[in-house]
Each structure stands twice: as C-alpha cells, then as structure tokens.
Amino acid sequence: MRITEHPILEFSPGREVEFLFEGRPLRGREGEPIAAALHAAGVRVLRTSVGGRPRGLFCAIGNCSSCYMIVDGTPNVRTCVEPLRPGMVVRIQHGLGESQ
Amino acid sequence: MNLPSIAIIGGGPAGLCAALALAGRGHRSLLIDRQHVLGGQLIKQTHRFFGSRDERAGRRGIDIGRDLAAELAAGDLVTVWLNSTAIGYYQDDNSLVIEQAGGRLAVIQPAYLILATGAAERAFAFAGNDLPGVYGAGAVQTLMNVYGIRPGERAVMIGAGNIGLIVAYQLLQAGVEVAAVLEAGSSVGGYWVHAAKLARAGVPIMTSHTITAALGDQSVQAVHAARLDGDWQPIRGTGFELECDLVCLAVGLSPLVELAILAGCRTAYVPELGGYVPWHDHESRTSLAHVYVAGDAAGIEEASSAMIEGTLAGLAVANAIAPWPGYADEREAAQRRLAALRDGPTAAKTRAGLAALAATATPASGGERG
Image (cartoon, rainbow over all chains, first blue to last red; front, side, top):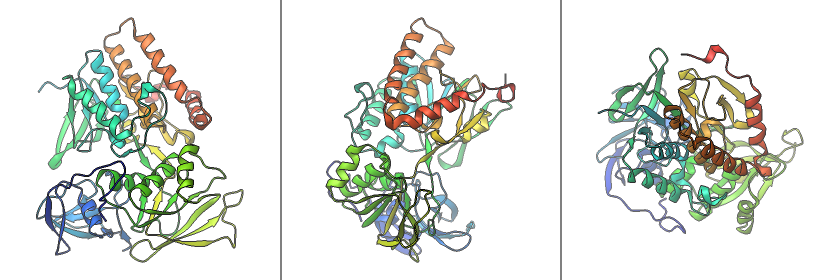
C-alpha cells in the first residue's frame, strides 16, 4: 500500500519501527501518524462507534473523531495526527473508550 | 520568554502571509499551528497554482508552503509554536488557551489575534457514509501526498469541483484507479483544465449523479449511485453499482469558526462562503477590535486568495499598532490583486457571499466588548 513511484513526489523511507496492534506486531515508519502506519499495513477499522459500527480514518488532520484509538492505555487518541513511536501498544477503541 | 503581543492561529497560507506582512513592518508575532510542520493544506497540494505571479502561480502548493516557511525562518521576528492547538478563549480577560505536546496547557493574552484557522471538510448524508474507506478529499491527499500511502485500489470521487477534480487526478498519479467522478450538479464546477486531464485519462465524470449508499460490512466494497432529476432527487430505475474500496468526498468546506465564536466575534450564516463566517470589514477586522480573520476561516476560497487575505490582515494589524503613510496604498494594491482573483465566473459564488456578508448589519454593541 506504500507508493514507490510517483511522477512528482519522492518519499524518504524513514526508520522502520515495530509496534503492537491488537497484540499483533506490525511495522511502520517512525514519526508517521499511527493511522497512516496502520493503513499501510492494510488495517482500516480503527474503532467502533457507540452503536458498534466500524469506523476508520476520515479527515486525517485531527478535526473529526473517527480515528480515536487506545494507545498505550490512553483512549481517544487522535491516531491520524499522533506520531508512531517504537513499541507503541495500539488497540481498537470500542464506543467511548476507557482508560486502562 | 517575552512573547510577541500578536498571535496568529494557523500556519497555512493565510497565517504565514500575515506573519510575513507583520515582520515586513518590523512587528514580532507568535504563529501557532496544531501540526508538526508549517504550511497548512499547502503541504499536500502537488498541483501547480493558477492566478497571478504575485500569488506564485505556476508553483506547486507544496513548494509555496516551503517558500513561505523559509522566508519566515530567514527572519527572527516570528516565534513559531508547532504541535500546538488553540482550544479555548476566555472573554473575561482575553486569554487564549493552547494545548501543546504532552497535554501541557499554555495561556496567553495577545493584544491582537489573527484567526487563520482554515476550514473543515463537509460530510454528506448517504447510507454507509461512516464505513471505513469513506474519506474526505483532504484525508486522501494527506495519505498519498504527505505520507506516501495509497489510500485504496479503486476510488469513486464525489464532487467535480476543483478539489474533486484535482484529487481524482492525484489518485491516478499515486497509482489508484478512479472508477468515476460523480457530480450532483448538472455541470462540472471546477476548472475545465482539471476536468480535461481526467477525461484524457479515461475517467468518466458523471454530472447529475450522486452516491446513494456505500456498501460493505467492515469497509467499503462498492457504492450505489443514481442519476438525479432537476430537483436533485434520484430517478427511479437509474441506480447502479460501482465496485470500489475508496469513496472520496469533495463536497465542500466549512470555515473553522469555533475560536471566533468563543472570542465573541459576531458571525453570519452565508452559504456561499461555506456556512458561518465571522463578520469582518475591509481591513479583515471582526466585530471585536483586536480580532482579525483571514483565509478560509473568513469564507471559503482558494489558497491564493488566502495568501492575500493574510497579507491584508497583517498589514491592518501593523497599521493599528503603528500607522504609516504608505498603508492605504499597500492595502489597496493587495485588494486589487484579490479583486482580480475574484473576477472570473468561477468566483461568482464568492462575490455573492461577500456581498451578502457586507449586507448584514455592522456589528451592534452585543458583539462588541471594550
């Protein structure tokens, strides 16, 4: 899902780091938003809304609440703007989320 | 640290140009942005800009953003706070609350405030619009053009205004197939040059068509679309399915006016400008004497006009602090460039919106505070 060739843009690879998504080790680029790393890994469902419906990335600039996830135990993290760091523990947030 | 007395919220084209205009008059300012990099939405605009040379036409948005940030960094009058979100305003003592990295709160009391907060993308009502795989056009641009991630394999674009057309072409450049561009209106809203590029690439632009549902269980697998009648109602029997894993909404923007409202600026609802906008005069001043507004936050237009509006707001604040004889000339020159940008048929809506805003009464004492 990563773009390797582009007529205008060049993307610097960035350092690859490992993080945990739902207990499963995934790799992403350090400093990119968590949701971007997940997207590149093929993960689209980031949370469920109060009614239980799946939700994913929508605005990608921290405006909406569609990408809230539980990151290192903290719920309601805007994963579209939160930079990925090595070893992060990222979980799908169900409903309003609870601190862990 | 002794903070500048002028705060600018938003480091996009408007905020950057406001800071540069102030610096040009020797004034220090504090530029606050919630992202980790300056430029606002310019950082994802890979297309070349139109307009006049003064607005850097011919340059790509990504380069314009870098140019402006570099000009700013070359001087030492602008203090930049990145990763900083303006989340509150207390009218009691004119204090502005900024959330910074790690949840730290900073409270500042700027003597002048320039709101260049930009806009939010509109959502659009259809069944399944909350499914993963339905994105705002800006999100698709961010994923592709900033982070180098392909947002999907096959896209359906909703909206054939400039954003819809440009982003559909950028999807092709990123290696994503574009199944169709659906436009509810009876004609293409954006520039023909953008539409022609898509047409040459074989992408159908279907006017008088809209999405009626996004289909899928955990994420989008197809959309249901239909033709619209003259009242924008789906015509029975015209429905069809398009397979796709990506629905991109380019159905307009709304000004981000929360801070203006918190500060007590009077707003007016002007659909042609994108919704609620802070009332402002020809000097970008809101109903509050110390609060100015520029860019999409003052009414949805384009990055080129946002740059001039930022310059105008910066000049106006500089003149409010320390008037100089050449101000009127500089302001009028900038306003002429703005008028030129708003001259064409595609800007008719903007002209109507600005006229409607100007026709609302000048602020009464209700919105004003000493």
